[in-house]
Length: 338
Image 1 (tube, rainbow, N blue to C red):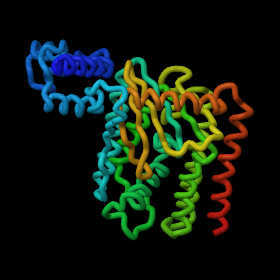
Image 2: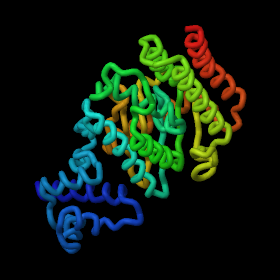
Image 3: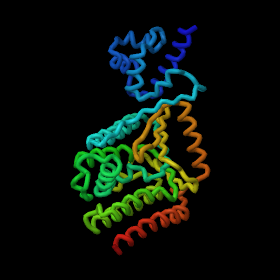
Image 4: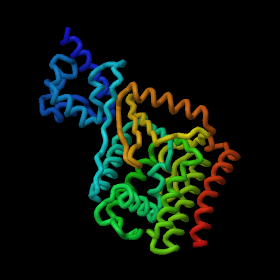
């Protein structure tokens, strides 16, 4: 009886792998390379004729970023496994964080059928990367104020303190994201966190001068204007303001309901993955099917209660972005008066 259950769970895992693997890759080749076995041995594992060892399962889950509970084949145990990238005070930790995002987007890009649904408590990080000084500010803020990274103590904001390598990785993330069809759900508070970060640094004297603070405000305004343009076109723009990816690859909704935290659902092929923010900007990932299906239902319900402000929704779009631009105008007036 135990063997039957084990084989049944193993076949569920194999089906998850087939769903998760891009069509241009061979599962038998991937397993053979990963487990260091022959193709024949890999086939036997795929058919359930040879049981996977604990080491096999651990290697598979780590390589394919699958939750271990995908192997348990249980719909009722209430267990969900998340993976995350551990951050520390070393500046290279943030570089690894960015590379992790880049690698995840690279995998999503391999699927013909793909989509990102983003419920945004804060402005999705990808949008900042269109603007170099704003990118430098966000990286500086996260390293100094959240991670307490070495080398950022007792210093004022200076874009030159952020390495060109980090900026280049951020640009690569943007290039990938701009080609993936996406739905974003914003509330009136989505812009607030960035505005508060700028205001805090201004009040705390962390900007060297008024010009630097106003430059970051200007770039936030340019970012908002770009997002407004994408919403008008129903299409993402690349770094040169040219259409990126397929037509109608961007939709924007305004929610009157408080979103609570950043939640991202990725649909790729036949598999769903859920990313949830924690500790300000870090993210946890699970491919647990039940959890992701519940997330999908929650997001669809949130969308039903939200107003579409992209495409032909010109009046709603104008009213929303007028309020958003008002937040930045108020902040800019405060800085100019200081």
